[in-house]
Length: 107
Image (cartoon, rainbow, N blue to C red; front, side, top):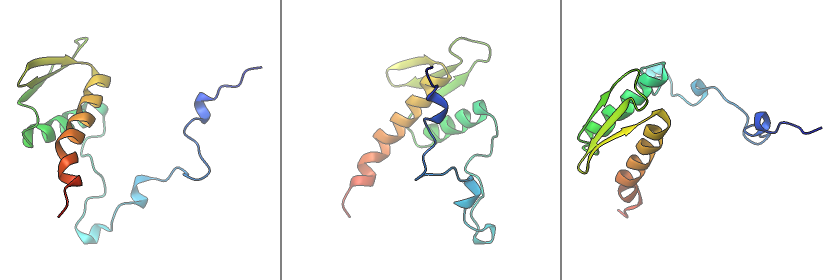
């Protein structure tokens, strides 16, 4: 009988699941308890895109609900339509490419 290892993939005895509140500083210190103000996936993606827009990494974006590629990201090369998975990978790569050299710079 073949065992399903997919459900066991992210469980590790060295890295137990810990709630996000455990890493959050005290509210009295002036820090927010949560990183995202949105609770749904589309809201979190919008917040990420707003961050990229505010940093000048992207030129603009549109969200068209009900489309196969609802996220349309405008970059200097043109408008790139993306689905939810693609836009998440794009945001990670864009932030790493933009802030990676800054983080690695010697002071």
